[in-house]
Length: 630
Image (cartoon, rainbow, N blue to C red; front, side, top):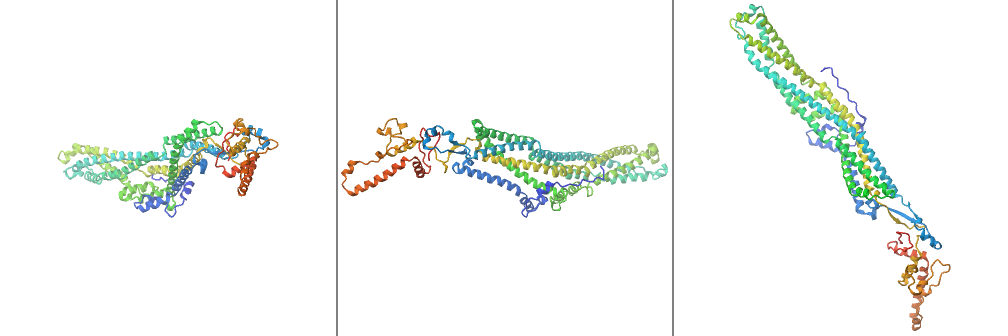
């Protein structure tokens, strides 16, 4: 690849700066300290990062505790917030005594509903929350938010796979280098003795006899072959073990991490289906109840199945929301380049230095710095290029010597040297070495290309500059907003879970109104004051002369003194003056009570003051349905 490669410059995303600006309360925002071997550095960075996530989850915990407190307090103290049905207060218009006949027949028409607007407000809020949850779940799954986050994380995983593939390709190339290098070393060990003097030719005057510089060329071939040393087998082995194996391991770990903790398609489907189904069913149950068409099925399913399921999923949603907020802060710290604010390349360099890679392998440290720091350092694989040059040089010298031998012919060389030399074998070894050298050079070219800065840095830039520091922040922001919205509104519908239950009607005595109470009720109360006989309407004609007693709506009130006259005979029998005065006082008090009982308003006020609405008086047949007198 070209040596003129210039890596692209990172352009910071505006969202990154916002996430980086969260409060740290004196702790560091240098994410490289998370990779430091010092535990104090790890703790310092962690404490400064988890604030946002901890705060969000604390909000959920506080809400959950308050919800439990409401349930414990019960309906008498917190009403529908405890999960019991809501109560709607109904007031009744005043009816005068002269309108008694019409009042009882039109009692239901005098009910004024809507005096308490709480049920309508709660149900409207509930329905709007359900609609918003459905829309946000669908949009986040298929349009923006979690959908984009899945794509960005898949891109990073794909980059890790590409890096792993690159490492495997380099492994194959280096295997070729090692195999052919070891084989070439074996051939060279056999060839070197044959090329040494006097084994090659005992005649020292070979150059004069042939007119060619045989001895000089032979020495050049020997030196070139010896210069190859071990054919860089150990260096190649070190590249494989220290660099390629490490790259493969970390790439596979990254892929495995995203497979486990990344956004999977089944997770998105579970998220959207669960929240949409729960919100839809609860909303339908609430609408049915709101319109007076109560559906026992939807209400039962919502109460006993969907509500517990929603609580579980809301808890998971808040945990995920908190985790996403922490991940957003950490991503912002990585992409801003630590305290120097020079982008993710500098953060990567800090991480490499703090993670003690140099102690693990100097070659790995040099390779990481070369790849991830914009190709600003010398390539640690420069020996491969030197190796190729040495192979080419050796091949050139072998070709020269082999050409000279062929020009003189083997028979002439044997004649000049005086013995039958092994010139045929030398030529054969030359051919095998040159063939191996060509394979080695091809494998070296492929290794250089695979391990070049342009190749690795391009993968790095796509994964870090493009996906992690550009696409992921945008996706995390929308995912955070959608999850926070769904989680918060889910808390609302859990709190307002009584929305799908029927409203209980209750009455309230208004200061400017007189509650309806039947005349028979007053008569029953009067009868119960003096005897156990029923009212004229309910008791038939029984009770002696009491059955013909006039009602209160007659024009002239009748004398009720027969209720309070004392026994005359007993008075005549008493001669004592003190007993007579006592009886007169009792008579006076009794007459006052009778006067009060004859007035319906006074009687009602007396009952209300005496009992403050804590005792329920049995209803009369003329009272409105469900009406209670307090």
